[in-house]
Image 1 (cartoon, rainbow, N blue to C red):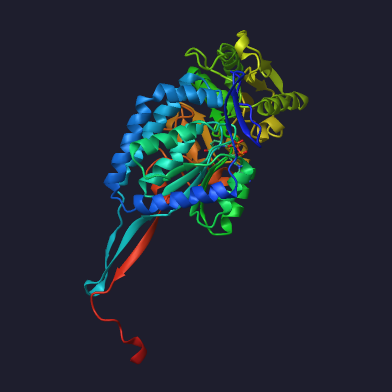
Image 2: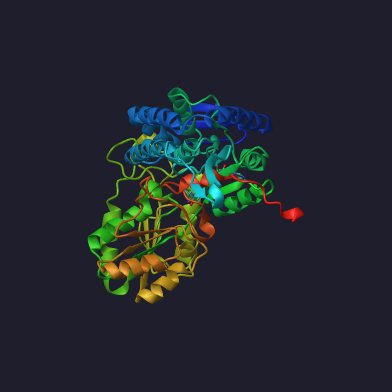
Length: 476
Ligand code: NAD
């Protein structure tokens, strides 16, 4: 895998030494055009019955399901993750569109009775043109997680993928069009920070749903505030995974791998601070290292590969930098943590890295405090539940968390006391569309997935109906 090489003035997309395409970042004129055409499409789409929108969306889901393997291959080229993971992403995507298609026909308000036969009712209405801005780790899936609820509610969306993964959002746009959405309803604009800023500052945008890092999320919120746009922020994390001595150890070890090495460790909700109760620490480390060493790294297009390439050279260097900093601060590398060159000559230029387990970690180390966004697991011992909860919550992030224990009361007590938007009990990184996903604290606000996301892509209008006469208050 030679991941995409991008020159931001002209997005030149290169895979395995071959140029795939050139793309040009969109400027003010293109952004204006995209928003204008999205608005024209919105005027048609929002007047359609929910059931009509549902039928079009179901057709889009059907097409994605039919082309699943092809889209997954393109996603591998786009991003560098393994084909098996990319296939799951595409499955999650068509399921998401089906789920919100099912909801499109159910959107409704409330009828409220008032004295004297008067009444009020609420209408659930779309917001208008919504903007989606995506990160590069789940390019197709993020575009779907944002567009499916937006479209189900009657909105239009202008989506900007990360400049590192510009390809598959365009495929999604083509599929929506083929399924029958009005022209311009889902528009893709390409580019980086400048294009993103044009979208966030645009007066005709009603909402921005952003997935990315905390510093960029803060900027998006600031820009959106100028015209009081609604904002959903899905930001970074440094999530704790707590493993108690009464756990099913084999499951806890598998859970720790799921929590750290999916998509080469480039997953926002990864449980990268792995707190292990001291009594089982030696056994846990032995097992986790044994399993980590057998992870197959290499050609992401092979079904047997479990880890592909990191997204860019810059990202690889950053992650390797975290490992050397950890060593300087006293951590011990139990395995991995190096750049990796697969035997296959066509993969020589790729940004591969061996998955890393760090022992001797302390809460004050950089590798434990900062989001690494690469395949690096930091293991920390703990003694008591009270102590580990305090340490787990001692962070400005709050995206996710996990606990492994056989004690059912402890599991729910820990879930209640962890300050995070999600807590996985006896598993990790399970995100079906039916389940809301989103952060606490600086990991953001607003949710994706689940019924609740309808709230984030619609607004309630109240209509009050008088059945009698207006009170003569001013002349009495
Ligand atoms: P990033 O913040 O660098 O970029 C995210 C997106 O914002 C990109 O499309 C980028 O072009 C755009 N952007 C950059 N500057 C901008 C600006 N000034 N105005 C508007 N848009 C701008 O993040 P990244 O490196 O692409 O992704 C990694 C980060 O995303 C990690 O922190 C990760 O945890 C987070 N993430 C969060 C979730 C979640 O659901 N919570 C999911 C995936 C990734």
